[in-house]
Image (cartoon, rainbow over all chains, first blue to last red):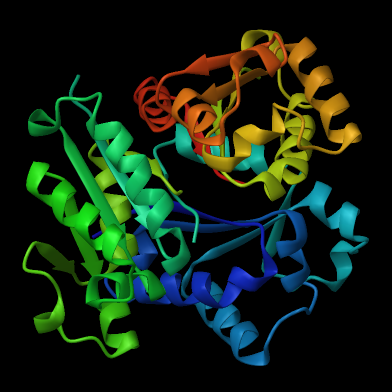
Length: 114
Length: 114
Length: 114
């Protein structure tokens, strides 16, 4: 099954739950033909810069390799004083996170907020 | 009015709020011709197994009788060590909760996360 | 760019985050030709009645002037004992907040829960 979904995260404390949700999903769908995106804004972008358990960071990297897209809101990065250079290479940056959430939904993506 | 909506809950502490939201909704729509589903994953499935105020459990049963569908994520049940047998009979179990949320939205259901 | 989106808030503590999200959005879209709505239910309606930082209230008023729509759930107002008369004039009241969220999504609005 191929699906389109954007997961929204804006709390650092929700990353473990979110990654587990996404991991469970990738086990039952055709990831290569699906569009699975994780959009982080607000304090949640801090995860990309290192505020995370090692086990969660490993899971993020594994999911990225399977085709899950990780995205950060640039406004949030600026607000947290995080430079793009410190982010993992696979993290994409969009100017305004909520606009990304709107555009994806208008393209038929489901929205999930763990 | 007939509507299609899936409510998502993944925190035990949100059940009272969610049930009240759904109760208010059922008072103003044609429930019999609507599709109203509550999808619980993560720790929130514990509610089905008994981690709840009695008043909330009564409200859940009342809503179920009017046609509201209560669903549990099987991954979450396994993660919490909850056997299907202890759940109320009207609770349906799906293999992966987030996939259920995606499929319902692709079928035109609105998504609400109280 | 013109967009359609409804932001959902049911926790008082999320207003600052939500208003900042919306402010960032209004800087990059054509607000006059967009439909941007904020739907508050549960305890979050208390914000309209004064439970807020002054800076947040000023931001709310500024966003309202640009065309952002602020809406309150009447069930929530009643539950909190808040009279309509104490709300800012630009706040609209709907009978059931979750029904508003469902109707907007059925009209093609994106849903975002900060």
